[in-house]
Length: 131
Image (cartoon, rainbow, N blue to C red):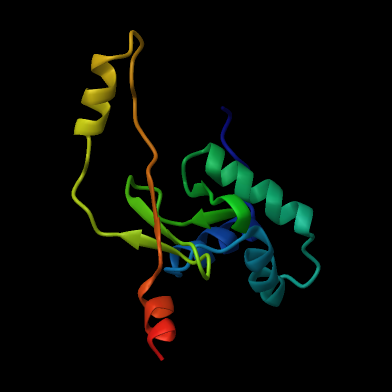
């Protein structure tokens, strides 16, 4: 892939994602970036999010009903999706590469990685339900 031309808008998207622990949708990213670049289009945000995903600088998380989310932390890690409020949270877990090894035992190809989501009710929703 040829070197990418510098883009202030793309850098603003990367900076926003790197500075949040939330896992925003493209629409949320768009609303934040519009504060800096009022003339930016939603299409430009989508194109840049997809480009950053393709280059491995960010992660795109497919979260079912709540749509795709984006994570500025591109290093391998696990996510929790709340079935009630649909928040996406990072999980602090040790590496589970043994899953790749287990899958390789029953697969004649080459396993290079895995993606795992955990589902349930987040702490905030549990507290709300108790009240």
